[in-house]
Length: 199
Image (tube, rainbow, N blue to C red; front, side, top):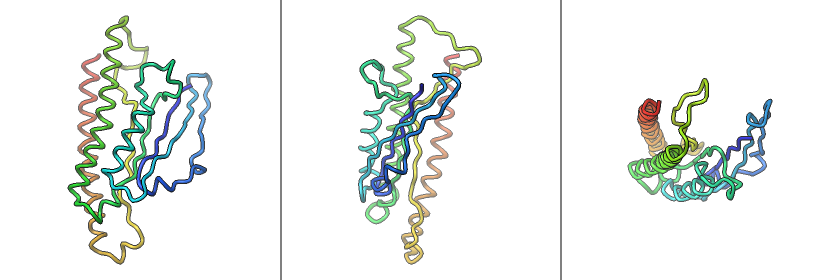
């Protein structure tokens, strides 16, 4: 059975998310290996800016890191971690957009570094052991076990009365979207190069 952990981290949108709305999920399969079980955790900070949410993300990665080697003593180690991070709205009133973008870069780096460190440790472990061949029909491509879903600022009903704040929300959203596009391309280019190096 594969276990996936869903960690919801963020501002009041997460802090006030009712646990009853996140059911435990188990997807059946024809054999034990194809069964997927999902657990979840909530970590929210009312009024938190993105920079204040990042330590909570760091805690989630440390607690549910799927790259943990000693699975015998860490029974709750998942096979994959999905981070749903909701933040950025509270930055508008007190911080510049550039401040928020710097925090977003830190978030990207946190997830990227955790995946890179985990994959490097896994590769080193394989090199120390017996040579392993790729399973038939499968490639040696690098698979990141920590995935990030980021929910940025959304337009609130009251913004129709505050043109300046609405424009700030739109500008921040556009900047975030461009950064995601650039980061996604860089991640794909890097993963493709590593995969070709291992074949």
